[in-house]
Length: 546
Image 1: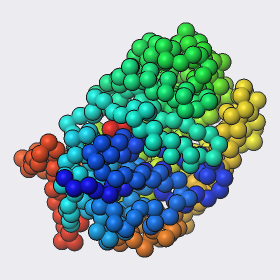
Image 2: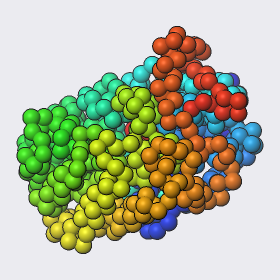
Image 3: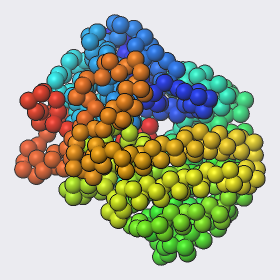
């Protein structure tokens, strides 16, 4: 195998960085698997350049013109930017491969713009791509391992690349790590719902934490586990064996059901500074918070009491909610969330609009079969800019009225002030205020208000939101053009649109006996193509959360 010039692009954002907050924070959104792929490619004898796009780099010049192979890692909201980047480099003769949540969720669509589309990715899949490194056009091949790899290169092995990413962050420098893959819960909207849970090597975690202490004065580690601490004693024991209490600060996403008071005391002792538990709904998904038998205001009181307990031990807590679930109806879900904020002033609320990401979850098949998935461009599928599922119990104007009211309430000066008083440490206070005044608060409320106004005044928006028309309103195309900036001219014209029901159609093909072919150790699927030559289709290949 010849020595290749390999580029790896980790798309942390889909637009140039505007304002202080993205310049301050974006570099800390780096993914683990692009660094893993960089290690594997180097170990195979290739020259590797890894770039994390924070919004400050010129994507037309970050890789040499003679790059042989370019891997791109993208969430779905960066898909249009990823397609433009691929088109730009393919024009110069570079082969391109897409991994990340978008590749797992929309492989048929991505196949029209990349030579390779990677699902679960282990070293064998990467070796196959490196050996082949040839054009697959107009439809790229889909490749996937049968499961998540049992082992990944740790921090020590990928430090060369992790260190370069840390250098891009001007103040906070957060090292991503994994202690597990998959999730034991089966939330119907989650990409990890069908991924078997497995833990990573305790010996390697201990070695990596000790290694970090030789490289950084006081490391900050963010656990990228879908649900940290499922085997709580095992992972905390590993941490306690590796580093003295207070030498490393930790951030994790964990379920409230795992956070008993005795465990919280242990987390506090080991310097866990931020936790992000999912509440999701006041009427469903109680298994993650030990509230399966209660709902409504009773659940609000129980969750509030529990989160306040967490805040007594951990200085920063973000509670995550999904808006627009089928269990929600009327004003009550939004009013209950307000009451939760009143009872829990120190918690920062994270809101996501219900989004069906292609193949990401079994629920999406039901939604597609019911004709409820709208063809919003991937660019807007970041859980905030668009809800691509027709709500079951709301008309769009009423839904947005509730969302706007809740957003304004959550990030009013009163709420900001109460969080400021309730938070105990400087960094949580700074983060809460910065987020409330920028991307999470006033800016989002203004955007929702704009959408709400268009629902009254713009017929094209009304017809698009109702599912009567698949023609994208001009305002949305203008937003993509503005966000992509100089990369807009390289976005293929057809790449804005996708088939939101391709998952359902491909499953129907399978039921008819149209099975994927087998190439090497990877499953490769050639999707149907229309007369245009583009795939008939519409959130790293993915190994871990991006």
